[in-house]
Length: 494
Image (cartoon, one colour):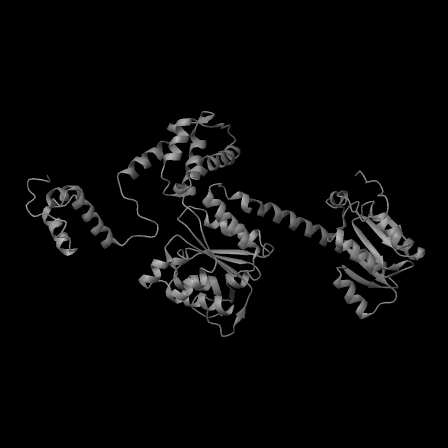
């Protein structure tokens, strides 16, 4: 038996949490077991009739004949209110408004013998579940109560589920206290609160752009609507277009039925376009049109479809460089970067490494049911010195692997042997920047460095570049570097 709260003093409106607890159990027939209903009506006979019918259905009932009595009884904890429109000391709408202010999820069924269309509309606008006219049909009232309680239960379950699902996507879940990360998180929080329709998140692979996009969505006014995401490099142009915009039946060979695209499915919410730098020029033009006009057409369609969607785009490429090369539309670039947010690579915020290590150890310690108390000083130094070309994703994978294979309660250097090997390999090779390189400019720069280091001796420069002397001479002439090169260089530099 559930404990009931004591009666509240005065006339303050209070619906205790016990109401939510009793609403979780059910009895046969679909009614909520032990649900407590408050019947508010000045007609004693009507209250008696409702009480008998609803108690037979398994409900507990409370009664009140005035607004004053009703406010006092609300303090005893109720799951639903059956409320008369006209009461001796005022209008039931007055109590409806008060309840809505303090308990917006409490279902209220209005009753009246003097109904009008205007009154019904006003009651529904104020949040009443239903508006019943007298004389009441008791069987119908029992059915309405059952439906209202079920709807209330489902709303609470959905709210609870959303709360649990959204918990990993708070801004606190973005780990980092370095100045660069604090600035990025502050911008993300500010952007989430704005109605801005376009956001561009940039950063190397593994910096957490997808997590940032989810945090923006789930901490915005759009959190109750869908978040749809797609990786632009994962599909061919025709498939990507169909996924984004949908298609009409018969639009192409396999289009056997009409299909809604992600933009349509996400109406009111967010679409996350990852790796937008890989999108083809044809699709770039269509996305630009959508961003400008807020309308699109399904593939094979002729009608414009208008939706309210926020676009969060992300890329690990330098879109400005792509614009200069002609592979990305300049107008789309400027349209996307209205609100640009750059996530720094991990090598530029190594002070965050211990925080990330602690977070991922706790995560995988629970997942693998192991006890890991931290890292040895040597292991932590290894992680702080590692260049992390894969950024946070690489660090997460390294911790996962180490927790899984380690037999000790503290992770040591040997638990990161693969990481050590990768670091040694990385130290002997060049790392390709995320935005790519101008290979000809890089080649010229390396030849210049070799000539400067050898005081213009082309033979020794060839040794540094692992080339023949003729290959170096060819590049000296090709790049116009004669001023740096000495011709009689077989004796070496002086």
